[in-house]
Image (cartoon, rainbow, N blue to C red; front, side, top):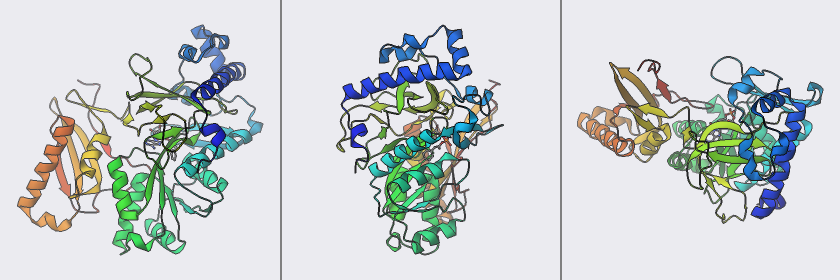
Length: 435
Ligand code: DLL
């Protein structure tokens, strides 16, 4: 079902005209209402009137994560605090969280954008939706909750954690849609198996997964365990939360709600726009947000755009599954390695399970890569020669894709750490300040 035909199926000309009109307005609005933008633009010699065409967008200075942190908590508001109706925050790895604020209009916009992506994944009003994201400051749970509620679904606000109970709820409450991170879905699937359930014991039909990178191979693994049609959807707190983009049932990229979020994919070195299909850094502008407009935000997420027509009938541009982030790309002995490449190799091998850990460390002056992965069948651990054979096969497959040697460690099933939210699979102990 196309939730909002008028806005999801415009011609390119109509969309560009709308984007230009909104871009001009939001830049002017931010300049006039947020001292941070006024100062930044004045210093750069940029004036809102400099934007006459969409080409001119490149003249606008970028906004980066530290701008949000430096203006903690309310420094980027374009409205008085009294006009706010919700505040969320992203956890961040160190120090203070990044605070994001919504007015009533922003909440309405957010709900509509999430409703669009849930409908695109096939969610319908009869569905029973189990939201297993952590409720709280994190935008994932409430954002998707609101979107599915708007479609008329019954919502089970399960929150994350207590995985045995998640399985019980799935079964007893006959949930048809599961909302969580892909890594948590995999864990729930494993728990269901451990408790003796088969996928046929559940009524699940759709998995709405997002908030962290996942490969097509991982989706296939989840589909096998839980019997769901898996959907990938993307967003970030700084921009709005979930609802920026999501896959339709064709699964050929995530449709961006580009009437509200203007996307650019730029070469991270030159900042020149990438061609369709060429990977670069996603830069997003909120075109309609009122409480906290964010202009040309460098997401650090790496993706590529696709303007070719989609079979679903939506005309909105699609972004490829994320390849990773510019800051999670590992440079190992000079070679660029994305954790998603390692995941792709492992998930293609039925002999290993879905969980893995990546360790990068330095021995003397030499970078080392270690990949820990669980064997799918625990009995293999007693057969030394089979184990060596499997280890060498994984090493070979990794080398083919990564071009570097990895030390592979095989572990018992269910022995690696599981995550109830975003997973953390990479540990890099190198001190990169010392070369
Ligand atoms: O994770 C918002 C969200 C919640 C999106 C639920 C989808 C579903 P943050 O916690 O601010 O917001 O994290 C944003 O997570 O910049 C990406 O690096 C990563 N990310 C989000 N969705 C995806 C995805 C939410 N589908 C950061 N694939 C972003 C890969 C994703 N990475």
